[in-house]
Image (cartoon, rainbow, N blue to C red; front, side, top):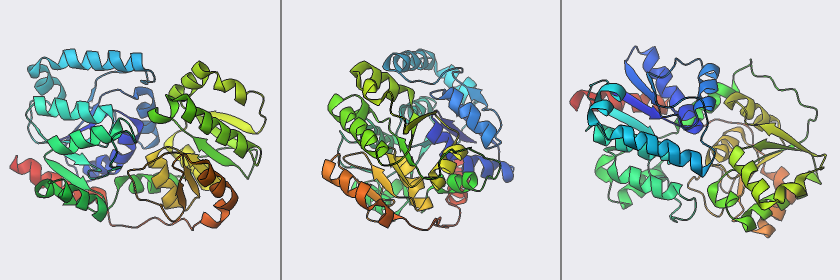
Length: 366
């Protein structure tokens, strides 16, 4: 049996091609949603026409604060004290292999639950590294733990595969290559049912939510100043993440954004809606790794508001890694037009199909 554990929006998006591939082939699988982003993943399932999870650990909220996260983790921990509950309720008393993704709390929780049930685990997007535990925090630490204790490591590129070899994980590393996120982006980008009415044709798409940016006032101030500078040049569509808004209010920096007519606020969008904006914008400013990837696939100029990134997509091409340096930010705003590229997906044959093939072999032998 193939067990799939997701908890966040990004995890479900990048698992979509695998879920669809398994369903098309008539291969049984067990989908577990830990509920970290339960409201968002519910909307995503409707957008991608997916069935409900086989097991939904928590419903009805999105974890947006430290307090919510602590309660959520505590509930999972106390439930997990019963190994029989994990084996019976989550994994249906079946063996096989458990598939986890990425570098979030849900990744580690999925790894922990699978190990408690004595299941083998396979990690998607293994080998991505920033080589600094503080940037991004805590994801770099989560990745190291997931790679250390997983049994199969699916590397999405030669660079990631070489990182795994250098870490001593060659024997459990598998080069796919290719990222399932590209397949998901292609699905969403081709969805003609997605419509967004825009009042402007020229705009910047702006989104940030990373912990190391929003928890430190100095960084948060730089992000706000960048947002204000861009709004003096053109309209900005600012995607509002609840943790970002909470910290803007706590620091009082939200007051600097009040009354700025060129800043248009928008709630978190579906994947298809976001990609629709990404396709139409002049450029995107973000601190998200997945957005960095998607901007690369669509050829959009991208300013990355981070000191380091664990991804290579777009660097030296359409993406400028700011390093949170004002000079680099100013350079991008002056020259972003020269960074435009034709939208072109990599067209790497089905990374999801290759992952499924490997998982089937592994689950039969486990």
